[in-house]
Length: 425
Ligand code: AMP
Image 1 (cartoon, rainbow, N blue to C red):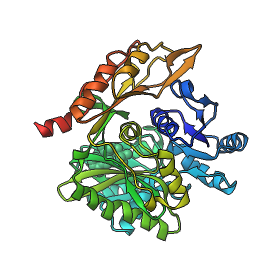
Image 2 (tube, rainbow, N blue to C red):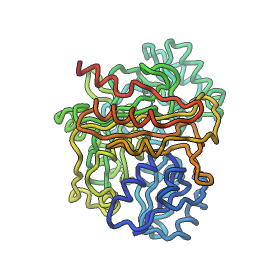
Image 3 (tube, helix red, strand yellow):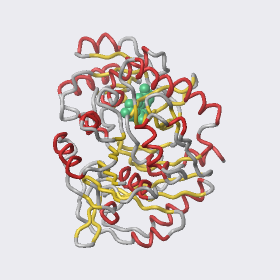
Image 4 (cartoon, rainbow, N blue to C red):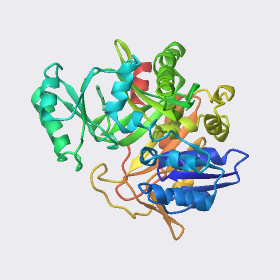
């Protein structure tokens, strides 16, 4: 079986690693891939913004199965385009991916289906914003509608700053691109949980839960990033809470999408805030998270290809997933200066020694393989990931492996998983 993986990040390297473990898979092609994926698979260049180029690639490669990693190709309709050509592809259609690509759509959908989410108003101009913010008590959350890689969310300490932020989003001054709609939202306090599920459009199967660290600085300080680390343990959610989230959030979402004529197949990633009044949906993603996927897949004992195919074939209910008990952690090494500007093309050393540490997988993100040498090629460079019986052990292994790796300006947080460790003590 030949599998085509679209994407180039740590998530896609983890997917390629898990897919390669399936005995049915004989060939993996990554487009465009990265320096880590290039070591075990053929990588072909592709522009993930160019729908017709991706379709041409799939027609030329003739994979038996295609897995779409990032949100952009999904929001462009890659799944619709490949399905129309009779290709088997894992991921939601363009209409179903709107749960991620439009925050306004997602909020109104949640309201229609009585799924818990913070109070909100969708606004298209400054006058609507002025009216909406009067009824919210600061802090007020202002979100741009659309895909802004986590950068379109601003937490404002006063109504004035909320109005200014909204204006900055409408004008394009804040994100470099004008937002047509924005969402004003009630600020919630609590622990955040990433609750990812697979769905075949009817059935929902949760993956193990994870908690990520989005800020660059230790103690969750400084600017937001794509994610500096994540961990997964059974203790993150007790079985009753997990069941509640499944019954009151994930399943009604999949059922609601089916009722509305846009069935959701793929990964439904529920970004939840665990509040005093129960779990609330902060956002949906329509794909695997990055770096959640790295920490989740090292705990998966079943065949990932069987599970992804079951989503496409509508038989997920008959395809249970097996997980290792215990924990996993992924620590991200980033380029100095990230999430601001940073250098690329710097040689990375110690990767082989890091991979020798028991239970460790070094997933590449922003790397490139040039003349046999691995070079930095992005902001988030590596996700050093480890599974073990306990979180303490998983973190010890990940940090032991990280200590072997070096590149100029390398930065990583040394406190991944600190909230879980604080709770235990
Ligand atoms: P989102 O892309 O909507 O998940 O927002 C990105 C991050 O902003 C979340 O992971 C939260 O840390 C924070 N955030 C978003 N919405 C809220 C909210 N209503 N209350 C508190 N924090 C929020």
